[in-house]
Length: 171
Image (tube, rainbow, N blue to C red; front, side, top):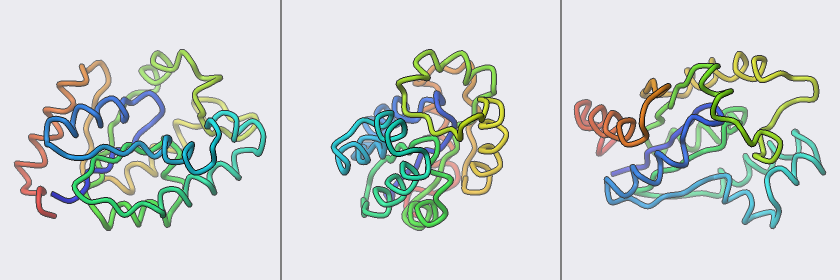
């Protein structure tokens, strides 16, 4: 199977769903946030706080472009969709699944927003971030899964069912 790329808002469950999905399908798992940390030797929030959002986005795109995986589930950071080249790179290598949650669900899940490494332009509210990113997720998604108020295992089942029903395993 080619790759399955998970995109979505911060708190959508990309990393958690990604690990379970990889185990379920016998695939490798890659978290692009961890790849960024490995490439820079720094925590995400430290990069954002020290060098700013623009620098972080550049490092995120470079890290994604360095990947050439096969048979992997890839959990991206919520801001990965700002990198057009990075998203085209990922999309060319697999199926892009948008894990969609509501604004209220995102706020509920983001209890550690100050240390989580969420890219926001100074003065940008969470609602601004939500409104800006949703169209980008829609643009790159092959599949959209609504997962507000869903258990992670149920989200994994939905992803597997859609991929199998649409015959996307070998895409």
